[in-house]
Length: 451
Image 1 (tube, rainbow, N blue to C red):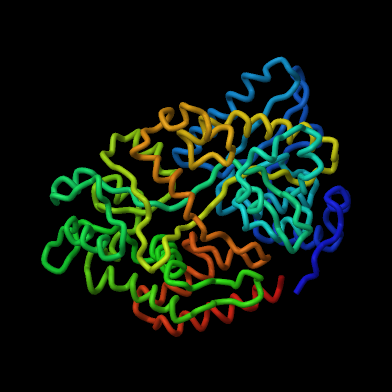
Image 2 (tube, rainbow, N blue to C red):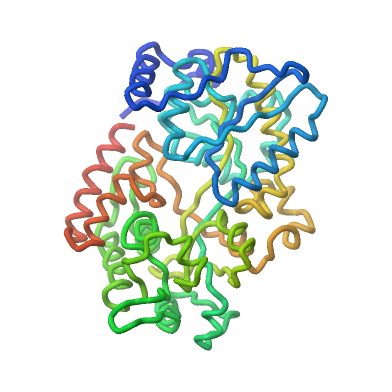
């Protein structure tokens, strides 16, 4: 296991990449054919002065609100010598492009990250430790939820802050109100237990013979939805992907196996879900599903299309009410000119200080206590009926990412990582839950041992 990095944040920033890692990164990016677009060495505006380059992978309805945030910054700083230029990079290419750009000295100044998934970038100096810079720009770190600050750290790599938290997200059920009324259910008493959830699912499911034509509980036959469902139910039952000290993988494996069987029962025993759904967002938006657990990034789109829905808190299915936790934040990337860092973090500070729009319309709960305390926080933006659960549900959003180098193999919210590929065989019937658990335990243990 890699030993703890004892260098100071400023030393890490100064040292950056080793020559060996730079060469490996450049070669890998070239081989993949995903070299980053050329940004130019100076990146200065002819008239307005300093231009800060921002890469974003937000491309759904939340991306529209984020673009408004960038526009608001630029309007507020017109004539003040600084502007942000945003470039949208596809999510599945983002990390490779950032790595290639950093290796060649042309990285963007800052971009989006997901807390807990960037241990390798922190170790290799791709992202910049921010502790010293936070003090220099006067960002009030004490105003942030302590859980968000901890999520921005990598304990095995100096325990520095590598991200400014921007939103706190969880998975909670969205429920079609028209389907509730049709089934004669009470929207003021949404399902709170696993038994109640199945009852609601059965009441709202439509079938044509043996074929489910409307899923009472929206699933897909593979990918993200069954994987994250398994992850939440498994953790509620007592399974842990890794021990608290990050030394042992697949704690209580029998609970993980039981959770796989629970998901299979949705398809094959209760028949409230169908494997035929491929686009979960479209299916819920067009009435093909009644209960859909997802994140707050969907709200702006569904509200905009006029969908009649509400949200509720994720039910206690396995014995302990828990759900998936995700934190989005802004990270700085290594520059050949370290003098760029302060101006960049000052811009990020402005975006954080002015993130009321982002956390009432764009995405999840605010990590800033001063914003949560505003008297208009519950009344601004989207209706509390559709976003309230995503704020109140943060109290039990306790299923985090695993902050190790192999972290992406552990995440439960993925449709293509090692976890999702392993569970694929379970959902299709080509692999038993016990076989899948054995494979997960072996691979995850290797990841924890790597550090």
